Image (cartoon, rainbow, N blue to C red; front, top):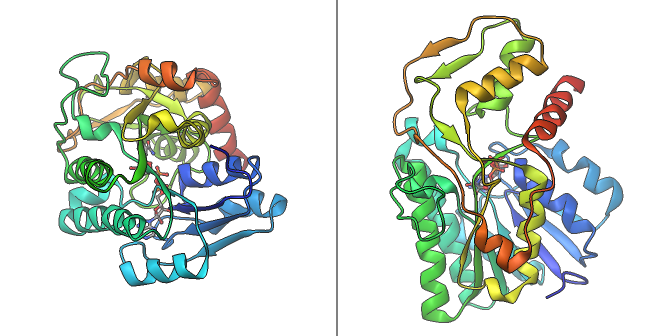
Amino acid sequence: MKLENKSVMVTGGAGFIGSHLVEDLVDEYPEKIIVVDNMALGVEKNLTYTRERFDRLKLYKKDATDFHEMKKIFEENKIDIVFNLAIVPLPASLVKPKETTDDNIKMVTNLCELQRLELFKTLIHFSSSEAYGSAKIVPMDEKHPLNPTTPYAASKAAGDHIVLSYYDTFNSDSAIIRPFNNFGPRQNEKSYAGIIPLTIQRIVNGESPVIYGDGRQTRDYIYVTDTARMAIEIYKNERTRGQVINIGSGSEISVIELIQKIMEIMKCDKEIRYEEKRPGDVLRHLASIELAKELLGFKPQTSFSNGLKKTIQWYLNR
Ligand SMILES: NC(=O)c1ccc[n+]([C@@H]2O[C@H](COP(=O)([O-])OP(=O)(O)OC[C@H]3O[C@@H](n4cnc5c(N)ncnc54)[C@H](O)[C@@H]3O)[C@@H](O)[C@H]2O)c1
C-alpha cells in the first residue's frame, strides 16, 4: 500500500507523536493531510516545520469526540486513511477519570463507525503499552494479558478491543500500533507533562529532580521518530491488518537510571527528591519487538543515549 496521492487524517496531529508522524507523512507524497486536534494539549507550532514544506496541510481545531463534527470533516474532505492519536493522557485520568475514559473511548468508536459507514478506508489506531499493566512475563509480546491499572490504561485497552471488534465483525481495514514509552522533542510540557520534559524543566529552573515511588520501576523507551516511521510502515504492509504490533526498544531502564542520565547530560548535582508513588504506576515494562521485526523489519534507529541528548538539546534550544 502506498501513501502517494492519498488523503490522510491524523487525529491528535498537533501533539507529540502526531506532529512527528505528520512530518514523516510529507515524505510519502500524500495528496493532503488533515489534522484534527482540539488543542487541549496540541501546539500549533508543532506543525510549523511541516507547513513550511507542504502547503496541503489543514488543521481542524475540533473535538474528535463529536461524531457529527467528525462526519462533517470527512464529508468535506475525501479521506483514505486515518491515524488515530488523539488522547486524553494518563495523568488526567488520575484527576478526572470519567471524562478521560468517556472521551478516549468515544474518539475510537466514532472513527470505527465512520469507517464502517465508508467515510474512509483504513484505520491505523494508536494503542499503548499501558494497556498491559505491569509485566507478568518478560519480554512482553502482544499475547501478554491486558491488565490495565489506571482508567487511562483501561480506556486504551477498550479502544483496542473496539477496533478489533469492528475488524472481526465488519471486516474493517484496521491495524493497531502499540508503542511503549516514547520520548523526544515536542513531548507535552504543559499540564500532565511526562517525566522527561518535567525533569529537564526542573533542572533548568535550578530545582531538584523528582521521582515518584522508589524509582526502581522500569520502562522501555523508544525514540519518537522510530514510532512515527513504524506507524507508516504498518499502514503500508497489509499483513498487519487485524493485528496489534508492539513498538519499543526491547530494553528496559529504571526511572532512577533515567533521571541520573538526564542529570549527567545536564551536569546537575542536586539531590533527587522522592515523593509518594503514583497510583496505578506500572512496575515493569519490557517489550518484545519480534512481531515488528518479522512483519516490518523493524530495528530502532535512535539509541536511548543519542535520543536523550537530542531531546535535552531541543528543550534547551527553545
Ligand atoms: N507518549 C507516549 O509515551 C505514548 C506511549 C504509548 C502510546 N501513546 C499513544 O500515542 C498517541 C499520541 O500520544 P502523545 O504522547 O503524542 O500525546 P499528546 O497529548 O502529545 O497528543 C495527543 C493530542 O490529542 C489531542 N486531543 C485530546 N483530546 C482531543 C479531542 N477530544 N479531540 C481532538 N484532539 C484531542 C491533544 O490536544 C493532543 O494534541 C496516544 O494515542 C497515546 O495513547 C503514547
